[in-house]
Picture 1 (cartoon, rainbow, N blue to C red):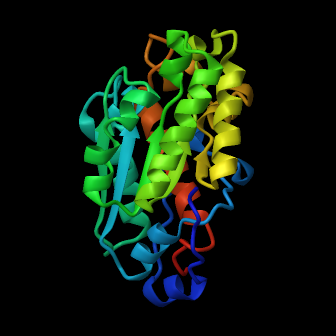
Picture 2: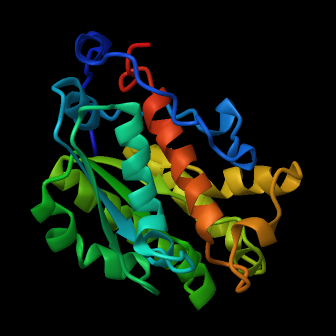
Length: 252
């Protein structure tokens, strides 16, 4: 189990000068209520790297949502957009977000890449996106639960901070009859292992249910993958969650 250490807010306050808000110039359709990006789980390694002025190293591991399927270029995929957003929040801090997404991979296949794509990269923070492909492929929720548990235990062995990214709220995923069992499995596992969660599913649902953004505006015609706007909003919301935490917030 991952056992985060406490990092004093004062450490961060010693380092940061004023930073431009990431929302400057942001498409208003990307707005997310604070309640949907609040995450109380500490990220001590990430906070410590920021506090010492960098470098900050993040690994984004996942499937096509990480790789950037549907984006017009690699620069529009969420890891690249997140890197740019964090550099805006923390000017002068060398921040790298490594894209380790592989189209079509399920959680078990990602776990088999953990040694090479996570441990060997020595990151301060791991962003693990998974779940959609398992649900679409007909995997059983019980098998999925075991896989998620094994993956979080493995990341715990590495001693890295972890934020799990939930499946997208999108027509093809929403058509899976037992999709809620996969979302519930992620919620229980992340709570048990005390890792962070970026609830992409709830955020995208808010965008659609509120009328703020349609599926057509943020997804490709396949009804599953993000387009450039979708990835931009995804990355900006994740950056907002990471930087609004008390231990990671730059001094204003």
